[in-house]
Image (cartoon, rainbow, N blue to C red):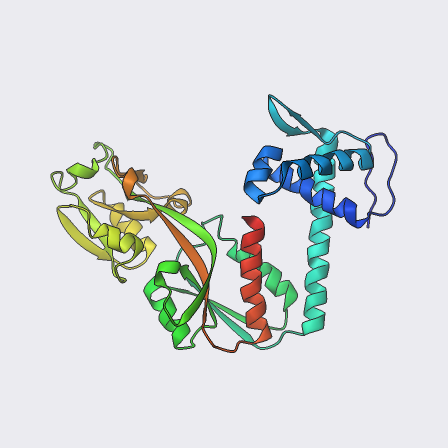
Amino acid sequence: MGRLLLGSGRQIGGLAAGDIRDMRLFRQIADAGGITAAVERFDLEKTALSRAVSALEQRLDGTLCIRGPKGFSLTPYGQEVYAAICGIEDALDTARARINGAYRDFQGEVRLGITDSCLTNEDAKISDAIEVFMQMAPAVRLSVSIHPPDQLAAALESRELHLGIVSADHSGPALASTPIFTETANLYCCPRADETPPQLAQLSGRGYGVVLRRFRNVGPALSSRHIAAAWTVEASGLEAVATLLNTGRCVGFMPDHYVTGTRTRRPFVIVPGSDALRLVTVFSVLTEKGRIVSQAVAALRDTLIKTARFSA
């Protein structure tokens, strides 16, 4: 492992376990934007974080960050140390994945189903977990498919899939679920250029329709059916909802991350007066209860959970 250049120009030798621990805490502080933010984000003790920074600065003989009334910032030396820490952790993750793969020798097939449009959700970390799993189990035949929410649970129960990622609302008594991320949705519209967005109470009077989802009445599908609008239209899939909204004549629930990551001819606007309808949905990784799964399936399930919790 390479050496870290000290602020004074000296160099350090090997890194002890305590050094690695302090470096990880320092990275969490930097990622959060300060000690107080790291306490709230990672549920850590403030004194432990302060001690870690002080110990690391003493060990590396240099000031790593500026902490004061004006906020938190890394010094130039702190930026170099932060980059080095990221490299160390990446190397450790790679080594861990290789060792696990060599020890367990994962084989066989894993079929993962995902509900539509999770890719634009930065909190999902699904591709991050799959990347780790691919390093861990290069010999496994991995299949990933996209399913409507109401069909994914059925695909698990029919054993078309080994694992599924879908909103917890679509889980069932035969499925075991572990929460891994959340999604926030709002009621959106795409008003024409010469129009103002309709107030929630004005939808019917201004001739706006509401988009209903075809799956069973949970989450946005249930909330949509309680909106007073001039007419209704059905859609299957978020792209279908977005297409209907872009006509300028409908309102419908859309995840905020999808709206942010999608470019359309008319911009999405939250319907004024609809703040109380905002929905926060928990997404979970699902498996069939009582089903004996292979080591490879268990490894991907655990990786999805661990990646989500590490990033939380």
